Length: 447
Image 1: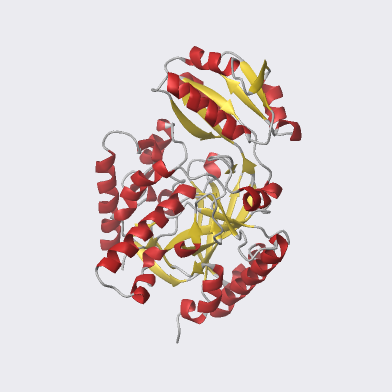
Image 2 (image 1 turned 180 degrees about the vertical axis):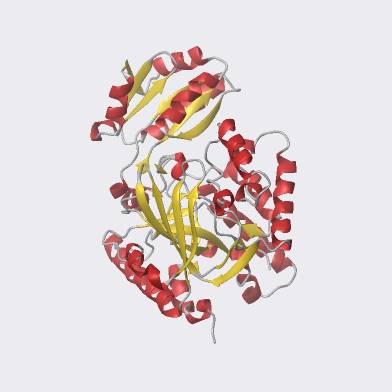
């Protein structure tokens, strides 16, 4: 009997996806301690990650086999990476992870702020992904990729036998034909987890879909959506899979795949053998951009500097914007209105300002350019990208001047990227920090 991938080979090739062999913790594992929020969240909040560490203790957990990015540029990161690889080997040796076989996982996540978001976990074909600005690949970046962010992440992936995804990829399915109908069919699927996620992460449920007829039904609906996308965009190179979260994780997986191809070719392996390697694919959760539980949120900026007054003076003398003082509550209302699409806010711990721009360039790009000019004068300054108004605002107490930006509407995203290429880096987020994907599913990326 052919495997699910063999039976659906033509459809999967056209869609640029693969049916993964999903690994999940064995029965008896405390999944509430296993599942931890995406590593690229709370990147300046040591207290958060200290609390996670205390909650987990010695229990098996994804925090032991991922690298929270708050530690990425700190001393001792090489030792942390070695511990991650050792923990992966230990979990495999002790049988913590069990193979669920080839399947799709239907995910349902309910949070206090956004409500219910649904998705399906599959593996993306990295041969069909290109994050360059002029890319016409089936899987495409929606924001600029910061190439400098790939090497440290690559150091984790190179020696890792396993991958865990916090990647979320968007489809444009206004009629909700692919994912949303699965909720009515869960009685026929195998439920594989049901937890309350730690640190206000909400309720997380997952069902394994492995019956051939159920898998085929999903693939057929995806093919129909692809045909519609080709017609709607009037293009044989449509944007079908659009990066939502985890852009740099997918870019890292791509970089490692290119290395792997080269290494295998140098060993004399055949093209057929190379293309069957598991590193060719990367796990991701697919979400409909029109999901009511998917809220588009801005990503704000904090500039850390030992001279915030100097930064404020740079803002006030900003030549590309009109600058005026404003009340915090008025700025919040402005940035979520249509009139706020060309504006940004700034707070230095004492006063609030609104920066008004002219021209087509997005405010996120304007703020990044302002930081670039400031850093030339103050080289020690650094920028971080923060989710959530209050989480951004509080960083003024840690020596930062904070910038607040609007977010592009979901209705504009696919059209914008198809016509203009990726948005400026870190232009939008989907939900608050605690609503980001929690690590659960695992996949082997070595033979």
